Length: 369
Image (cartoon, rainbow, N blue to C red):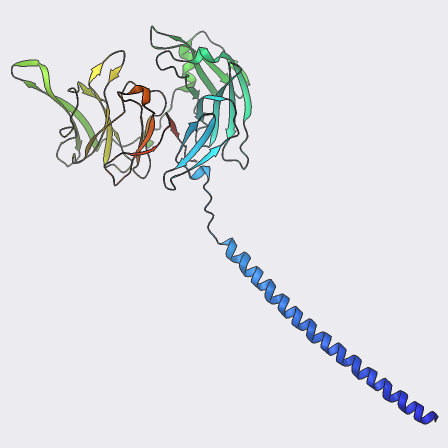
């Protein structure tokens, strides 16, 4: 009996051992399967992350834009390549003038707050651009408005970014402001002087002759032709371009002016060196009047820029882009009541002006140094 019981006990122990080993083996296979599955899933996730990391960031950034314009109290930035805008809504006060810090996207600007002028600063190159108070100008906003155009005086910034100036006290005697207020942002105080010329000297531009455009290869000239019956009345007055080694070219013989131009303003050549913008003086009042024109330097393409006038010089009303695109503001039309100033663009391979959107001014964004 005892031996039989021991025999059965031994058999039972072996059966339990075998069963246990089977369970362990199954568990190992299951774990191996799970680990294998997990490894595959991790690889899929890793591959997905790798793919996401090389996807191009298509978000438009301020640094990629070409110019800034305004809609109410909002700073807006526009990219010609993307034909898209970024709108910054962090400022709530009325923006009256502005100037970028030389070589950066740091913007100094004045606002009209409770009828007083206040200087502020925003670094648009930072992750979270935030307006910062610099100083109260201690000037009434009305003291800084021109009576000719009804616009605010501009903000001047010295080349080193230390001094800031704003004109005030408009006078009809010279059609300009009689005074300027200067703030030293390093010493954090206003610069005082009875000599306006000394105060203006802080904002005189210094030019590096080596970096000036080489105009020796391109020159412009004008001439008059007179009627034999009345030599005092010019019958035509043309503008010419002359390049070294090339024949002199007329840039205005295809243009039909309402009045014969009396003279021309010096031309500004495009970055590509194939077009030029210039002004044609067709009359005089308090200021010279007449349209701006654009022409190719070979004279084949000539165009009068509608809605422009030499007398309007408030703000940056025109600019060349590096790719040869020309931007300008159409400010004038006979139907003044229904006219809205508009940014116009003439693209490098086009001979027609394209309307972008209705705003009265824009400023080119500085390129980082």
